[in-house]
Structures are given as structure tokens and as C-alpha cells.
Image 1 (cartoon, rainbow, N blue to C red):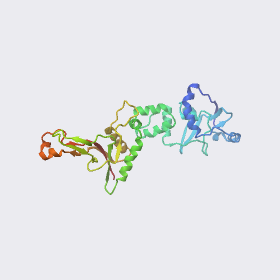
Image 2: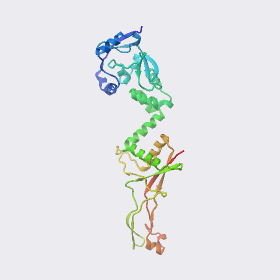
Image 3: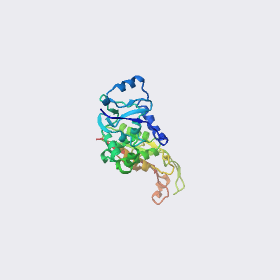
Image 4: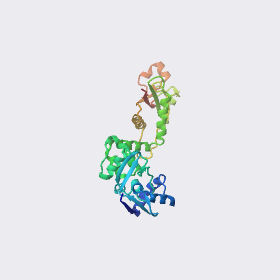
Length: 319
């Protein structure tokens, strides 16, 4: 017969705030109430099937050794291991305040990916860190179970986690970043044809463009009215992005070059074959009077003039 111990739930004032968030999450997963019929039925089960035995509202009986079923993977660990980090979800789950779901064999069931739960236990037991190839998966489990010290160590030591945090930080700086990224992907798919590539042209919404009435400073005899549609390698703009990106933190400067570079990096990370190039419109205007007299080649200032509007072309390769 398994030995059981009586555990009286105590909550220190200093831990109340740190566990409030976890308790809210648990309320959606575990029922905090049990009727008298359930209590009587549990008390009649054999000790091997006894996972949580409520005796009063505040007193819960746990075995010293806990058998777990995590997404179909079986684990056995001690109650003290699960309670080691008081601000973790595991500690709250086994604090005695919640009725935990169990499978038909009596194991406490946790609906998570059991492949990585063992690494969570190994860290709690002996501070063992996961290998790099599974660091992101273990990070997700550590975030779910609120193992804050493991999260901090991964953020400071794992290259893939550091890269993830960098990308997350940049995304937060750009308003509607995810919407903009999806617009680029959707446009590339829309332009995909029988050819193995598609190109998406991105310009600045408030770009500096050659337009208006322009005087010739060479001969001062002619004013040229300019109104043209910019073209970049023969392509017109597919998407326009506001040049003033208005980052959340005003002390951080983000220009179009940085933004496009980051977007391409994200696309490659997501599995796309994408590259980017910077192209100038180069639409030119010549003074007709200077052109006829041949003066435009003799150092005429601003005659001819060229449009300096910049576009970024993201090229997608479809295999």
C-alpha cells in the first residue's frame, strides 16, 4: 500500500501575487469544486488509484511519489520535485487546491507534449539544461509551466532562443507588423505564375518623388511639369509602407532598409526562399530648350533631373 501524507495548504502573502496568474489559467483546466458524491467515491477507491483525496476544503492527501501521464508519456517523480519552485504552475497544481484529472490507471493526466516534459523534470531535479536542438520546444513547455529560472537561462545561453527573442522584440516595435508581412506573402502568391519566381515591389508611402513644376537652373527659360508613375526595373509598386514607421520606443530608429532586411530574414526563417534588392526609379526630366541647344551636357545644374524614389524588391523563388 502506498504511503500517503496529509498536506495542509498554506499560502504565504509574498506568493499570492506571483501565483494569481497561474491560478487563473488553472481555473480553465481544473474544477475547483467537488460534490459530496465525488468525495465519497474517491474515498472508496484503492490506495493505488488514489491521486487526490479531499478530506476537507483545505486539506488534500497526496502520495509521496506521483505518477504522471503527460500526453501519453509516463513519468514518475516526487511530490517535492513538483513543488520545488513555488511560483510555478506545477507547484500550484499540486498545492492541494485543485482536483487534477487522472487517467484510467490512476495517473495524473497533463495535456501537454510529453516528449519534452522529461527535460522540465531534469531541470527541476538537477538544473540540467536541454541540448540546443530542442531548446525552443523546452522553452515553450517552461513558459507553460512558468519555470522562470529555466526560461531566463535559455534566453541567455541558447542561440536559437536568443534569436527568437530578438525577432519578437523587433516585431513589437512595428505597428501592424504581422499584417504587413502577410500582405507581402499574399501578394507573392498572387503574382506566382508558371515561372519559378515572383517579385513583390515595396515603396514608401510618403517617399520623395520627382514631381511638380521644376525650373531649369541652366537656362532659366523653361518650367517642366512632372507627374509620373515610378517604375522599378519595369515594375510598379505592389505595396506601400509609411516611411515614418513610428516605433513604439521613440529612441529607436527603424528605416526601410532595416525593415525589409528583417522581413526577408523572417521569411527565410519561415521556410521561404526570399531575397531583397534596393532599386531606384531613375525617371529623368530634361529641359527641352537645353536639349535642343545641346547645353544639358555642359554642366547644367538640375538639368536633367532624375527621380530618386527608392523601392525594395523581394524576390520569392518557388521550387
